[in-house]
Length: 118
Image 1 (cartoon, rainbow, N blue to C red):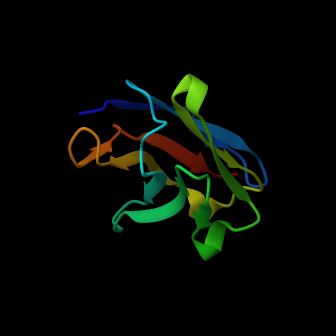
Image 2: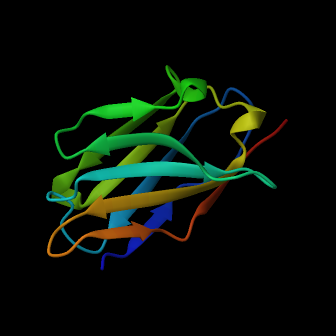
């Protein structure tokens, strides 16, 4: 099992930026995919962005052009750079990792709150 710890959330005004970090307790080089999900109050959790081991990225339409996911295998960390934040981006953001070595697994972080408000 791998432990994931998110950081970087906070309060920001509309149009502002935040960078979320997700630090893994072991090497992420072999992970199939890592992703950022979010869950607004009273709503289901949704996938925001993902990045594969081959660095292929994918984004939900609502964040395309504003958010960028990246990974640093040397630091065992995945990032989510969020620019031009909007109130509708307010949510708890969760980091997720999926892999198959040594056995299939899915791991979640504890979440970090992002609040966008004037």
